[in-house]
Image (cartoon, rainbow, N blue to C red; front, side, top):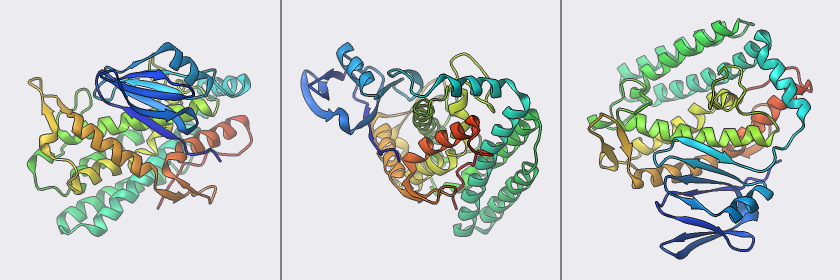
Length: 343
């Protein structure tokens, strides 16, 4: 079992990270504000104008600690790490599978099954707990449509068909996502998913949470010896981590969506925590990002029982387990890839 190491998030603009013995020293305005030993770190995530010294980058690479550089608003720009673990035979087999329509469809179907099953659970739970009968009915109806899509995916299908089912089911899920939001403030209304740029506070939160989750899943793929850029559901595109996006699909409802809904429904975040741009884009303030990061880490620390392994673990470990289960499948050690479906 992989030790659950911490991720250090650096959000303060102008921060400078340097090596201090066997530790990371975070300096702000030429004063050391934090010192974190390498042994306690699994990764660093730097937002915006954060500088990292070359000696620190080298030391982190030697210790197997990745450094992700994101824009101030959460878009992944680059990741540095040491030599990739694993062996070339696993990656060669991954590439062969990605070139095979049948193998690609098989893995993609498993990922979509996990995504839809977890999304259905979110909708069913919300329908049971909702006070508004009309909203509960709409949520149940959407859950029924996801169930129909799941039944279609029980048998082997061509890749394009799998992608079509995933797209239609995703539209059904987001069509009722606004019903999951309990805030009466119209500024938290959600009508449709908008990405680049996000057009409302809910989309801004979702985009930021998905960026954080993608970084975790990408690191898990690389740690398992897989190439995070070569996916099965998400086909090759320069700069796109296709495999990380594949494995992230089943985890979106469990981690990212749950974090966003909790932030709004528990009133941990307010409309004043966003910045409305003349272009129509809505951006998170520093306070909003910090609040989301805290809740995101808390969610990852929650303990669940893995449905396939039957072991208790934190949600933060699930991406690493799923990446290793996929690697076992590609190597031929198991007969199928089991997505993580939680009740």
